[in-house]
Length: 448
Image (cartoon, rainbow, N blue to C red; front, side):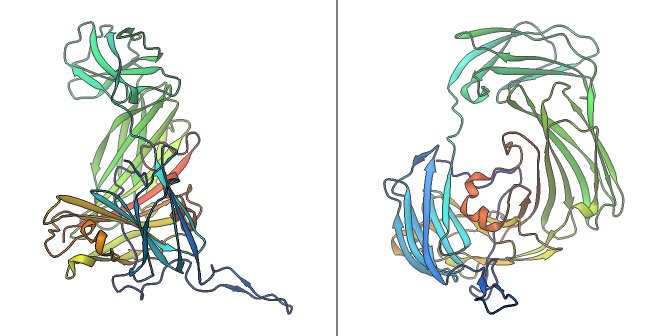
């Protein structure tokens, strides 16, 4: 089962308060708008207590019998229940509550900073089927000045040094565009792996068990997407750029490249781009080596047209997560704390993800989605019957804890995000379906 909370090539997550109720959370406290007359003041804050509704659907179908735990602001249990036949569960909570979903036998999800009257919707799409639709037998025109060839339909691929006809490429259901057609793109590279020509066959209709496909002549007019990065921030060591193209309704990874950085210095990266691309999602990443912990900042943008040049500055990569501290003294309630450099906007979320190996039962993971003001989180309590879904004294924490600061012009506010996190998809998952978007993510990780 897939519960799509956030997708990102780097998105793994955390938040809240290692100390529990001493951590300020977004939306906490009363905000009073006092008027100049004697009218009653307006309270923007939610009521002190109220019902929270949780609905879980998979591909639009309600998911019954999932365990749901409602917690107070310190992570203590208020009540636990299971989703009904409509995938719904509800409970009365106070401000700054938490809600935990025991997603399946290997993963948990907690939303922090939940407010009375919230209507939380979780879910996602079914993973694309691997059922075979057809085998594409591809005839490739010859070309000179190439020492290698690569073909893909978005989910299957092959490469060769000596093209002969025909090539066989599996086309699964997950390779199809919404109209049931598939697209094949090929690129020819020289000895240095530089793209020297493109070819394609778009909107191909499957024709039974085998579909004969002849791609077009090789086009040697190779366009590029150029990245210019300047004024690298302190501690930055590497600049990496990548791009994903949309062609005839199919998403195609286009690869990437990187360049070393020195403080205040710059870098340039040039990526070959298929000229017929309808849109592009590009990502520009800056890696840091000054924290003693792995840290990467990423700017992702979806554009309806491929820009000629993407110009970026070191100051664009803000805010940052500067330190991460992990407390496993109480293995049942592991805690994470971090420091932020810069100002975090309200259209953001802090997301924490950690894994552990249980004494019995194998590896499990826990994701916590938290308000943007969070600088710490402690794992909430699971009641007795569900305690085995969390870590215990026999658990081993030998995998990275990952904290991510995520913001996007597609997130109106954390209030929207926490109630509909399944509706937000990031990174190479194109969201929205059409039109531009921008996405910023800063990730830091460390091993306990």
